[in-house]
Image (cartoon, rainbow, N blue to C red):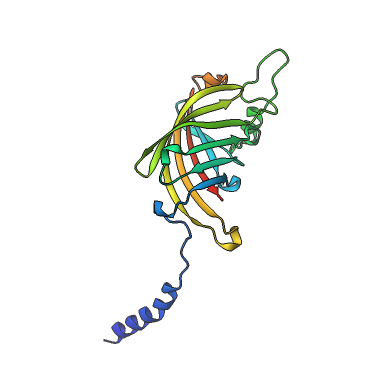
Length: 209
């Protein structure tokens, strides 16, 4: 019986500690979303892009420091609007050489292999939002490398709530989204098909107000 008593005592001592464990402020409940205009949390909004490399493996990089706004009414999700700006010049990969190549200036009289030096920011502006369960299909216009094309993203609600005081005490809502583009349609066809024309996009977005 002694081991059993010791075990019960241990559980009793641990219970207060468990009860006092902090919980995260964000909730997966859509009821936590309030209406209004939100601003993108640039430090926690990322756009991951992924291509097929020679048929051997996928390769991905990231855009960060995304800015923009989200206008949202939980009772009228179809009226939601999102507009963001993505600094292409801050693209990053795991390879310093590849990152430099993505931003390599064009040779005289030629076009850049990828984005070139000092590329303009990319933008995405929604044109239609269609609610779908705890998410939505977002149609919009993507402008990249001076070319504008329609793109559709599939977005899923991730969480909502109020950030703790030490992190701004702001109401925050987050989403995940994904989509696919063809880079050649935006004038970035270098290396196709060795490096796939199809680019998978995966987005983690946080907006606060």
